[in-house]
Image 1 (cartoon, rainbow, N blue to C red):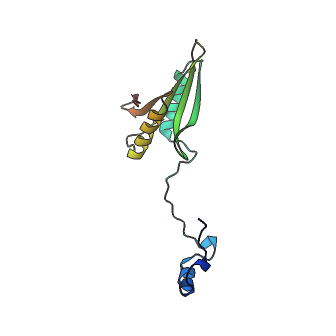
Image 2 (spheres, helix red, strand yellow):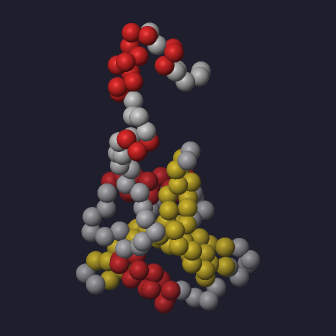
Image 3 (cartoon, rainbow, N blue to C red):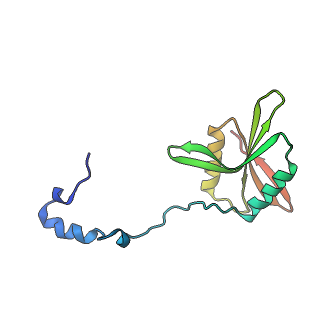
Length: 140
């Protein structure tokens, strides 16, 4: 169905409709409805990245901000994706999501959704608690 134009409406309503429309793109109100991630990582993610690099073996590779598709047009970006090559020639995949003391419910729901949909990767929620890294596996 094509978008309606001004001519599709009764002429007596044209003046009222034109008052409601912005004159230029600059007059359009900017409403920030989405909380979008920037390229910057948190200090906690930086600390975990250093910890991860110091403790992996040579047969591992680390990817940062690795996307997992969770819906049409929606991806969940893992903080760290570790790929370990096995002696048999296959690969093991581990995902790490670093969260501080406060994790939003929506973020946890998306993390669980990603773990359920992508059974080929073991995903861990990682936190810094009482001076040590704590790992909690997200069950599939």
